[in-house]
Length: 269
Length: 199
Image 1: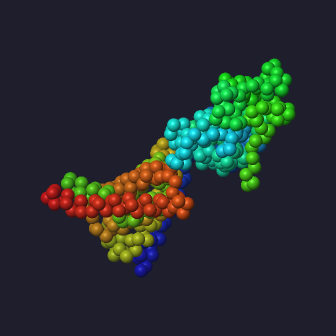
Image 2 (image 1 turned 60 degrees about the vertical axis):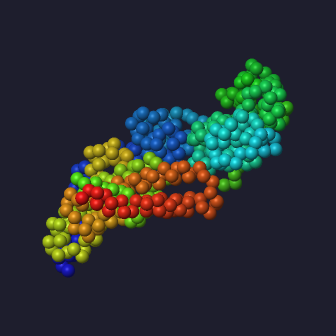
Image 3 (image 1 turned 135 degrees about the horizontal axis):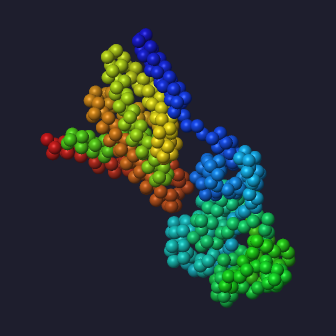
């Protein structure tokens, strides 16, 4: 009995001594600023900065290989705090949020078939472009909602909707959307064109009741071409987010009803 | 050579650690959602199990058995394995940073893993020689890794499936694990047959 106790205690002692020596001799001296920067970051590990988690971004920041301000989740307050730790200037960045550029709900946009396959936009898009008549529109199978680290996206009436308050602008939904219709826009911009179809007006009308026809009326109502609030790709109006329109009256004047003021919804969380 | 081949087949396919001995079920379910984490975990388990069995074998033969302390071997093994994994963690961080980056986060998970302790217990019970014990541990860990990688491949595919609500997540994983174990039952007797051919 005594031998057994001594034996176990001895093993424990030897292990403790070895570990203590190993910790002293072999430990890697890390820059203490890495820990401080990690503490300053939000810890969401969303990967929006392009590094593997907050830890990876903190290492790159301390090493000087990453720009301060790439963290969309932390925003300006976080960048300022990191700047204080590292003694560098924060790069001013505006908060960006995801916008789904489609407003063709189940009642407005025509569905050309029944899709009963795997409930994922990517798979649905591979099946003859999906069941929606408009091949540019939101399929509503929620690939973006599944990939969102903050649960900011939910599918309502066949359309993905982003909660502006929860969105951290990591861009994962932008990458996963097979129709490429999600865009990161400045959070301060309120007037958006919710369509992604560059086809001619009549062709758009055949498949969707609220598609952009490229009539240029939004441009005319916001001060003409010189004002530069809109750009056009084919027959599709796009808001110029470098210089976004501010007059909300143009939304109601859109004949196609594809414009909206602050279309982000609040999920109630 | 032939004996080692039979031992390998037996440990990987017939008496698979997860699927027929039911050891190491928590990492089997916990880290099998993605193939790359499953590969990392498998690598860490192979590494730790091989070294741990060598150390526990020495402990058993040179300290516990000669002093008639065989009855406390489980306690001693837990202590030594826990200390060893910590030591490997520290040493790897210092000398092999790339390997630590790949396996590091899995090492603390293995500290108290039943598969690692289980293999030490089996070596203790079988009274195998040093080479055989270490090789068996390596093969058993390889079997664990094989099952984990297979399972994660299936789970990655299943992530796209649309099962009834009550089956989502871990329930479906458990059913799948059971089916995989059933499939591995098909290998039973293979080691005996091979042994006969080898003779």
